[in-house]
Length: 179
View 1: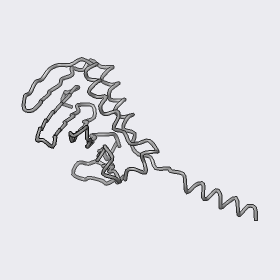
View 2 (view 1 turned 45 degrees about the horizontal axis):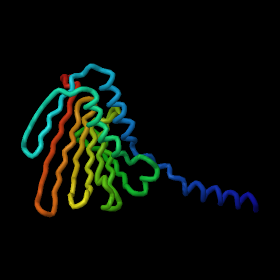
View 3 (view 1 turned 180 degrees about the vertical axis):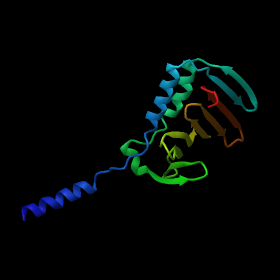
View 4 (view 1 turned 90 degrees about the vertical axis):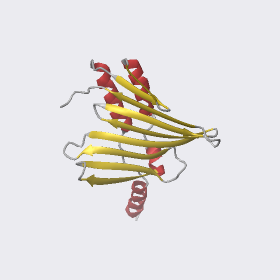
């Protein structure tokens, strides 16, 4: 009788354990940042703000400050699992497995994450992240994407109720040699 009772408790404990693992984006981004920091890649920034475009070479510190914006967009911690749904599908057109994360509530700042993994190696090819936030009366949509070992973009669209609109596009690239 006592052994049956113990089995029931063990079964209940197991069912409450969350074994789901979301993809750890922070680890991926940190590996990419370290790779750029260790190498002598020329790094370029192309910036466009409300139609005015500028391009320049940047140093590793500036690169890191832009790349750091990706580090706070990770939802892999266990406390985030209840807030997001994960779907996985094999995309034959891109030869990738796509991991998609969408929030269960429209109130979450991170509204979408797509991670494309190479179908043969399971290495990250691209990451797409869309966030939506409100700061005071300003609505901000940020579209971020990272192309592994090559480049990233941070595009921000801001709008106020009075009609002010701002569009900012930032493109950073390195290791831009053809393979």
